[in-house]
Image: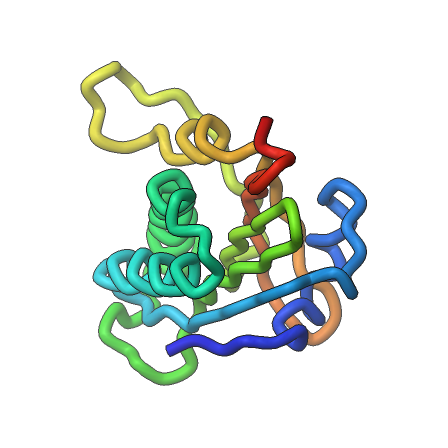
Length: 169
């Protein structure tokens, strides 16, 4: 389901430009998985995140990271896919989750085919079941942002950064 290696970072030059200074050569680990255009993919993204963080011995970060991954993937599936995208198609998944680890930082990035910026909005009322996804991303990560993809890649990347290890304090 996933891939590992520094090649995952090649399409993310805009992503690295939006982050605090991090040497791309200092990436200690990276993993990526394609997600089918179905809402069940959110569960798969959480499972992929759990196993990846366990391999990286970052299991203590799982709750916050999984919540953010769930929100980013849900937003990509709900808002970034054209309404005529078949929700059962298995070929050429349009959404991809990337996890990248540096010594003191972890980045979760979700790539989708839309060029539209993510929109932070207030839920209509406190009991509303949707509308607070990016608020949660902002609350549980140390920072987040998005960048359009350039070159042959189409769409955008929405990312969230977590400080890990000694830099958490």
